[in-house]
Image (cartoon, rainbow, N blue to C red; front, side, top):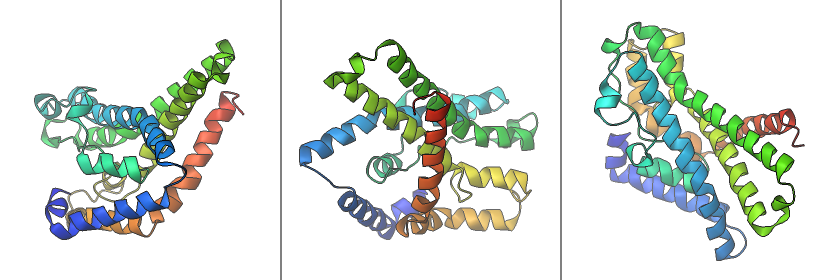
Length: 240
């Protein structure tokens, strides 16, 4: 990823992609657009920070001190946010955090532990989505009158965005394309982590990912799955 971003063509590619997304998602007045973006910030910060913290914490529990030594076993957003991943999530609607570095040689059971670390981030995003849906249910149950105030509407909107962004992060990161978590999980499940195809795909992974984003293939994958899971959560908590 770093090599791609250090390439001027790669940077231009992302700038054009973000510009296109900005134009596609623009609506209403500039103030409405700014307010909408401000309200998604909590979801982005919470989702990215806890996602990467989960990777680091599970790796640490499995015996690898690398994330702890690098200051990654924390929920401090400054330790986890990747600039371009943050910008992509902010403008496009899906993105990534700064990858947690691990040393599998320190794991007690390398194959099992790498799989656990790979699944930790998306599992955390699912937990957060469930938690914030539960918070919405509590507000509707115990403070229904508050929700019909101007402040209440803002609070509910922010909570909805926290849930949706965590679901987006979960589903997006499960796509089996490097450098996303889904690729590492697939590598463990299908035993090709130490084969040449792994390194070949990983080297070209970010370029592949950008092409998928550019042609909206990621959007076609994310939209129906995220919508379905979101509706399921609302149904479970009797919010619809």
